[in-house]
Length: 153
Length: 420
Image (cartoon, rainbow over all chains, first blue to last red; front, side):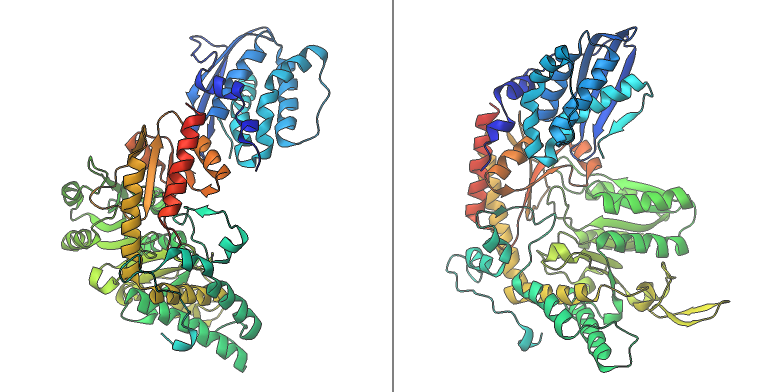
């Protein structure tokens, strides 16, 4: 039996119960919604950009412990990052949770990636990978600025 | 039923009067041999298959397989005979008046689409109304929405009451001379609510409307008698009835089917074809274009034999008792809220657990080998109405017993502990 605590590490349970940056930003420069039609989870990601730097990032929505914790941790690591760094982190994170080819991260990002490491337990649970990536997909859509709701299906 | 093909069912339980012992019955389902720890509580999504169904399909391919309705050779004639025997088996299972009233389709979803596209296109005009209920799952919603958008008919949704059952008074008030069809579930897929379909049929017919009943969850649990029900269409899926996937049934009263145009064109559904014009077969073949799922139909017939051998009254008694036990046990869990199912709930227990998302819960349950459905159960509008985004659903089969419910309860307690 795979140990469930690999998936539900304390940090995940903590962020699932008490998500950080769980709020609306009144006047975001970028925002997008994410929707997982399989489970009905919904997330809205808000960004305030200063040039290409993320000044503030927050989210709202309803979801499982994994998707809530993933969104919460995402907002924590993204603050102060550039748009390019955000994309780089997502590409790396995506590869880590899906088992894809991993990209090399520059030093400051490698540190942030370590903070996302507890989420990579979803790799052993294919049905749950989308829970961990939903908010990141919404972030990507927000940065693209097309305003559409991204779906995981 | 032919005694030669009758399955050897191990009965002899003292636990249920006139019933059977699910633990011994399990031995007839190879999935449990290969997954000995499995606590399978997802039969509402798809039931497991008894060995005799699996073997019947394999035997057919080994000994009697050829295409149907076209070969002159004896093997094809034998295959055709088995296929048509399967149709007659379904006829008896539903107590239909005539085997020609049984149309083989891929599943209940296809059956409903068939009625929408054939009967709907032929007989509905802009402004006509089709009534569905809030209990429906997507397969009895979306085909009518497609028809509405193409034909300009109105789709009327009749509500549930505060207990989660169909509101009959509200339903009666929705009916009018504009109502042409009432399409309604027999047992709600998401909550297990049993709909009083006899009353629905009576009220609908009085208004001059035809009635389609979606029997997906009812066919494996209830003795269905379409003549006694008096409906116009009845449909169910083979795979939820211990049969193979890819096969399902549309029953339609013969006069109703005979007035309907084809919905798909191809071989097998024609009498004569020229490049100018085609004459179509009578029902049921008019609605079965192309090579059908022959092995599926034969496997389904074996599954229906299995059900009848167990006794549909026994299955009902078993599932009612186990549903009751499940309600009792689950209700004791703090923070657990069962979705309301009205006056009578059968075979399905859908619930919300405070503070634990259904997907997290299902992952923990899976770790305890308990297989349940988590999500919207293809009934998003109903869950929206009940104010939940997703739920966890345990659904029962003939192989389940109290130990499975106990395992579910223990696993839920473990999840509560983890997410406390």
